[in-house]
Amino acid sequence: MPVRSIKTPERFGLDRLTTPIGIALLVTDADGDLRALDWEDYEHRMRGLLRLHYGAVDLSNQPAPADMRTALSGYFEGELGQLSAIAWRIAGTPFQQKVWTALGQIPAGTTLSYGALAARIGMPKAVRAVGHANGSNPISVVLPCHRLIGADGSLVKYGGGLERKRWLLRHEGVEV
Image 1 (cartoon, rainbow, N blue to C red):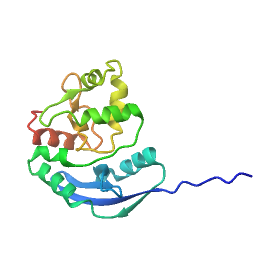
Image 2 (cartoon, helix red, strand yellow):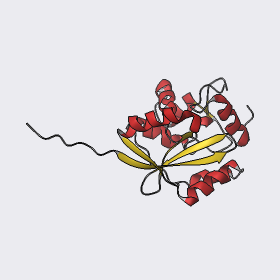
Image 3 (cartoon, one colour):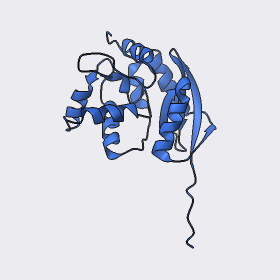
Image 4 (cartoon, one colour):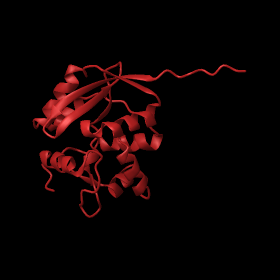
């Protein structure tokens, strides 16, 4: 009988950061790259996304890199450009990665419809797929899924709750 190799779980650190809109959960890898950012009251969802993208995951309490914490705190204090200083790495399908990378290119203070993002990545008919990929974005705020809105300007969905989405957009100067 052949011996099956058992994959060891991915090991990530878990830290918490107090923000004006709740406790942010920061998941980082051994290189100090951000792998997930979600909200304490959505920890179950975050753990599910981690399992989906990485399989078995071992999360242990470990401080995130100081420069990451400083950049995130700076963002929440109004220094919106600080997000670009955060090193991140994602796992997902090639399509998801394309969508998530495109999210990071939407400037603070602006919004984009799901259809406009689909067109931007060269797949104008993939509006629903863009919405699905956006909904499974593991790195909230840094890959700013909150900047996607409905074609009619409505806030639509946000994995961390619509009140957080509204706050983030207002924080960035968007009238909602």
